[in-house]
Length: 328
Image 1 (tube, one colour):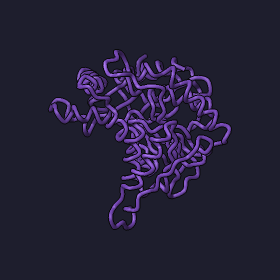
Image 2 (cartoon, rainbow, N blue to C red):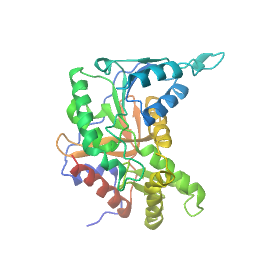
Image 3 (spheres, rainbow, N blue to C red):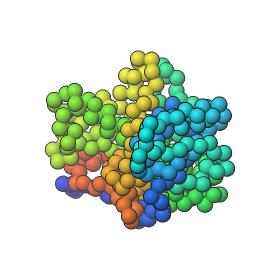
Image 4 (cartoon, rainbow, N blue to C red):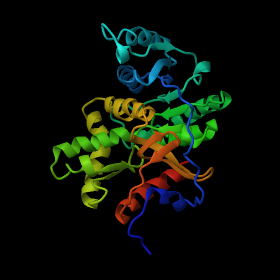
């Protein structure tokens, strides 16, 4: 018999999980963290700018690792030249330095931005899934390095497809589930807000709505949690999912908003213990998936928002979650 209300915490049992792994527990992080970034392409460079300019309250220094030595040298020179003329307090921006691969996990926060290739302008289909196989192989290599280093910090996965790569990294690294989070949903919420601001029919999303699920085709945008309208929600979801294609049609790769909304801003909110969008693991050792939702890092571990969901909305999130569970 169908229930009147469901919750995100009901999802693991849909995959046959009776005892989900706990998200309680957190690294012992200093007030100012050592952050290491792997790969400084379009997304990595843009995120780096956001972290340096906005993260002085949380970041002690930023280490850069990339295969392109000239790119690294250029960034070490230029990023360290971005500064206030007469800095005081948090106007003293965190310094940037170059690190070798064997020191990648000598940090408090590791950020994975590597990819084996971004689909070219004009490519068809879900751009994120095109990258899955190559990037999954790549991230498992660095998961092995984290295992060998007995890494104790936070791992932030930014590369696409975020949720799938989170699982691959978690499995290969042997880290606790609360050490790994994916950062792809922040920009989907931001894109939904962009369209909601332009259409009075959708404007209530700005105060009542939520985003759930993966950074891709199974995204779930809910126009309102309490007064959910399935038709409006699906319309806004479709606009949000297709937004990156709109930018590509103009001849540009859509990386600015993801690098800042999903990555830089959301990672800093995580470190500050504030609510943000990111992917957390819901499942046990065998079955489950990383799912994007509203969450925060507390003194005891990660906590996610678990509102009452009507059957229509829960059904959409359930489908997205089970699809992610199948894509191991």
